[in-house]
Image 1: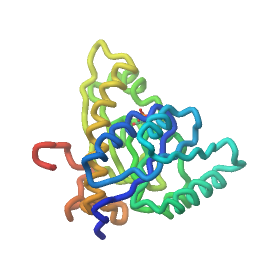
Image 2: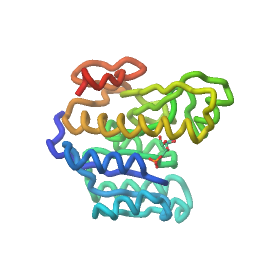
Image 3: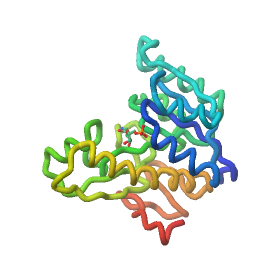
Length: 220
Ligand code: GAR
C-alpha cells in the first residue's frame, strides 16, 4: 500500500501546538501536506499557528456533545469530509473510542511523552521524577484501542538530571518530539511505514517492541 507522494494529513491538537509547528516547518520541504488542523479546544494556541500559515482549522468542542461516542462520530465525519491519508495526534488530549480507532485503523499516529509502555496517561514528567527515574523520553506509535498501547514506531531517550523539574524535563523531551514526529510522518507519507495487525512495519521489516532506534545518520 503506497501512499501518494504528497500525503495529506489532518493534525488534531488541544493546546500549544509546538509539535504542530514542527510538522508545519517540515511540511514545506517534505512529502506531506497538512490539510486541516482540528482542535477540541477553541483556545488552543496551535490554532493560531495554523492560521498563520493559512492552514484551515476546525473546532469540535467535546463539551458540546452528550457522550464520548457522539463526539467521536462528529470528529469522524469531519475527518471523512477532508479525506486525509493520515491522522496525526499532536497533543490531542481526548481519548478516542474503539469505533473511531477501528474505522481509521493503521492511519492514526500519536506522540506520547514517555518511553512507553512506561508511564501511559498524563503527568508523565512528574511521575518519572517522583519515581527517581534516570531515563525518560518520547514515543511515536500507531493508535489502537489500547490507551497509549499501540505498536511503537520510534522512541528517543533523554537522561533525567539532578536539577530537573517537571517543566525543564518536559522542555527537553519536547525538543526530541519535534525531531522524531516529522521524521515518522515522512516515513508514512513515503509508503514505508504501515501497521499490520498489531505490529508496525518499516521498510518491510517488523519493528521491535521499542520501535526503531532513532539513528538519524542511518535511517533517513
Ligand atoms: C506533547 O508533549 C505531547 O507529547 C503530549 O502533549 C504535549 C503537547 O505539546 N501528548 C500527550 O500527552 C498525549 N497523551 P504541544 O501542544 O506543544 O505539541
